[in-house]
Image 1 (cartoon, rainbow, N blue to C red):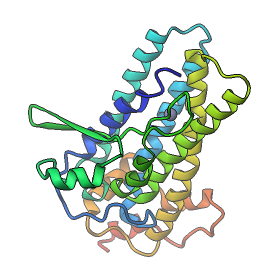
Image 2: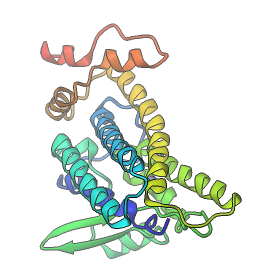
Image 3: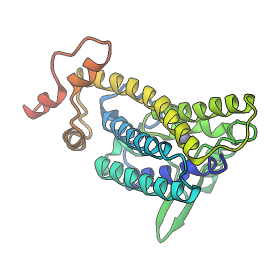
Image 4: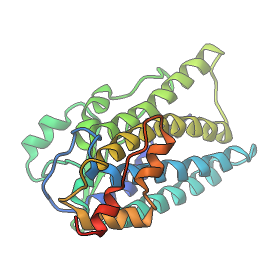
Length: 263
Ligand SMILES: [Zn+2]
């Protein structure tokens, strides 16, 4: 548990490195994910979550893995998944995070007070840390306000809520462990908890994806059609396929097909 506190930092930082390249474009962040323009953003999160879940599943299968080996593999995986997400999203303004101007210290302070979030700058590159941390002793979030503010920063609020759901799973597991007597857990056991955390996150992200895809059957994403199409091509986003996965009725046609005909 002792690395629980910092484990999400690198991942989030890596994930954000790509997303935050986009300068202050038109933003509707913190709004609903039931918006066609948010589909690539949700897809990217799903990809990352699935990738990381696979990495942790592999780590969980190595009972004797040392803490050092675990951390090295985890850091590599987070860096890779963050870079992939950044490449995939490019400068899609719909998927930027709504972060305040770091030069505006008043706004920064007001919005981030008590969240535990922080920013650092090196060589003109801003690195944001929106990590939510679970205290292994109390099993509570170290900064509960962070969980309230995060959904107002993410490309749409559900993405932030999905991260909170991931942390909630850690809280539940921590409490259950405590009830059984507590004590230190091995890195492999910790990896198993991450698998469960990502599963909780993915369940929510997949629901968001269906809601977003459903909107795409009514209206395509006009404001960032180029990025949308690129994202769809790269991740084979197929609206029909996505909706067929859910319980809802499949749509009559894909907005991507409409786009190709010049709509
Ligand atoms: Zn986690």
